[in-house]
Image (cartoon, rainbow, N blue to C red; front, side, top):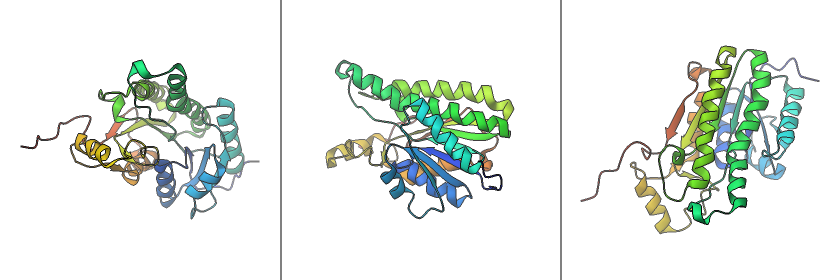
Length: 254
């Protein structure tokens, strides 16, 4: 039975145990949201939300539409509302197209596009009934500018942009906002294999005009803003947060 007395806005985070998802959870609670999340590992989710007040955690596979619908239903039963949703689920496969197997390709689509669609579809149903809400989908700088060996992640993330633009148009009249955040290389567990050596880190840092890797809390701050009422006139946008990688070239060292 829904808790009709709940007055705090509720934010649902898919992939709450990841580096960015964890930061979003902690920042949103500071803005007065009650935090809910779903993911494959209950243990990892509990570690991520340590210190938060009464978070709701549902063990669910974000690539399974029925599991996602069940997670939303359980959260709605307890809180009676969904005010914000962010999909932080994704993957990074760095290979040229000729090296990508069918399994890797379809898995990347599931993790980077299906998870966003399933979460968005589940979120807009209660949001439009309530008269509004905010959704943020996480993309990548590779969907905004061509980077070598990023085909497997760039394609589904670029499709995610189309999903967000269309959904923003569909639900704008019902008060539901949909935006995209596209980060550059960010210091998270997912990025560790790519930044595993000092040389790889230096190459990545040099690619970004500001000369460093992004931090999860910086990306989370933008997401948190877009989910809040302070961004109530923003929808249908793709925001790059990438140290300038998608739009400018670093000054050459002479």
